[in-house]
Length: 384
Image (cartoon, rainbow, N blue to C red; front, side, top):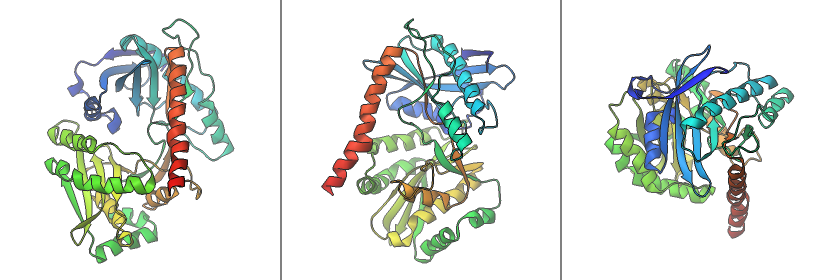
């Protein structure tokens, strides 16, 4: 990407759909409802295909504008993520892209933040060097404040989950079931045998059942100590998907609810597109957990994703390793039990545009992370 050109895209509808939902027009419109704005650019890079780049923008007073590029750029810099020099090549490409973007963005952008879809191996000594390389100094890019040039660096916290599990849906259904661990297949059949029923709500029906989902989600948030959005956030997501049902991106949002004797036990929200299906949100009751409703929910969504024509099913977020000490270890075991490939991505990367403002914002982010990840959890443990 040493030689590239970027221009604002004027004929967005004529462009092919994004490979990841976070780069889709649907998601950009949804984020617009949540206080963001967005711009879309057509990027031409020498020796590679052209691609559409969605940039989300949000004003964060008093710092300026944050430009966020989730799951972009959608371009393969190199296929060998195990080499330390891969990080340098990728970093150089982001620096070049950011330098070209700055003049096209609002004048008070202080940070360009990337969440690229690039994979990065972990665990081995060689792989650790790869991860470390993303925190090292990359080629300088000029800052608009005319002071110290800026470098690519790792963000304080990852925005999107860098680690996930993906199922290849381009295989027979029997093969998908056989790829599950034996206990997972047993739990799926157990839920069916005990009378758990899964119902799917799409289109306008999806928004109608959000109160049921949200009641379970609040119960989950209290139990697991996680933060959730307001109910209207999930309503808006379903409403927008229903309104854009005939859009060329063919994105569908479905709410699945598992019932036992007409009592809702668990629910998930899943996004479907031709490229992928993504398990976005999950919730469960504290009651009848022995009936294993969560297993049957996922299996039904996987089957529906294959029928929809999605090429993969993304469980969207796991801890980086199978570490029993990790607070979300149960989530790791649950999602990996369905088979699929474990994917590790590089995570969130920052290119400061206005150095001083970025330093102040990073300090504020560290304080926020300390509050939510450390202090608040300790206070919660004391209360219990």
